[in-house]
Image (tube, rainbow, N blue to C red):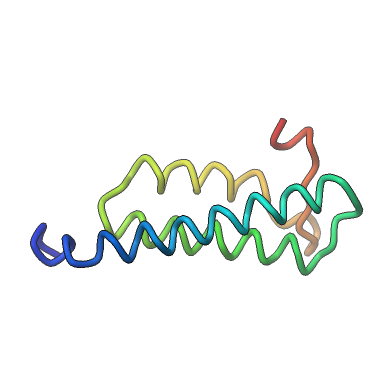
Length: 89
């Protein structure tokens, strides 16, 4: 994709990224303050993965790399995703 092709998607990317980040932050607070709901954790993982892909396509490699790191911290463990303050603290 050329720079001119991407420029039309920049506003949409940031709008969508803001929504993902706000929801990730909200869900992380809930998960860390209570029990790890498998559904909430999987939703966080999907949002991070989506943000990683879209930021990579847009050429925002710092964001993509950060999402990769977060995704590595929220990883499947024997088929179950877990998040703890030790992972992200």
